[in-house]
Image 1 (cartoon, helix red, strand yellow):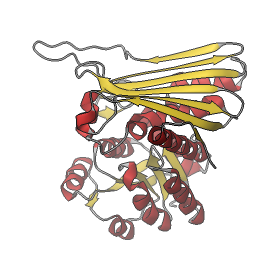
Image 2: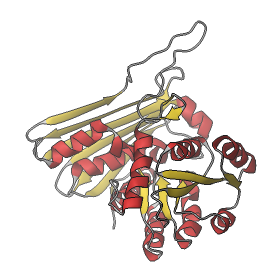
Image 3: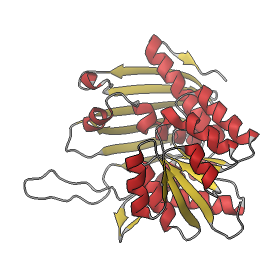
Image 4: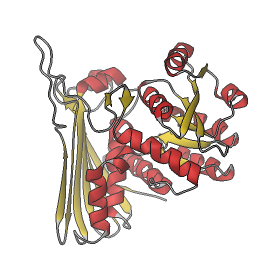
Length: 338
């Protein structure tokens, strides 16, 4: 790594989140955006021109030509392992968008590659920088809620999302992994041992998607959690609704992520509910929790400090999701194997 106090980075994946990552990295005082890479050369060229860096369509060519310290990988989880492998072997630190992988086997291989090549890996679970979730986690850790009895986490989106994705990605990986990781954080040190999932499919069947999935997770200390995922909200309504309830023997916590405090009304147009928490844009910059996440990765990589996100918990979230998939397939409760 260079010793200039600036982390030289590239972004792999020039879609929606790749653009956000590139913009933020280019705006941070202790980071430099050297390159972007995407198999779609046109997308890479467009982002590179806008951010003032070089464009590539081949990861290995980029790694050979650029003097990089770290790489942000913002492609679909289907391609995480393929993207991580050459970057890890080149000895570059990695910021990897959530989920860590599409299944447990690939997640463990990604961890192995990071360890074998002695590089640092941080999975981008952005709720780590959402004060509502972190305040709850710390209150639990301090014992203020007592022993956790039960948890209920819900995340819903419009069926415009499933139409756009058309079966290319599951609701578990697209949005539900946030809640699985939060659930594991709230439950620590307990570990999930059983999963049972049920689904309803009426509205989104033509788009290769489920409407709603209810996931019941049992922990080794008897705690029970329910995670409800839905992307059947009508188009034109709030883009996403999320909540989390934790009940303990001494208290409870309730998180509501429904209304961000701003609605914009225009004549002959749908109501707009701007995203103000995670990656809002104003004054020509990307702000919010995603910026905090990437800034944390840059600072802690430069300083050699631990990351806020536990890689072990990122793997455990995918392992629990795998068990839910198996339960959906069999219609039976599934033991979570390790």
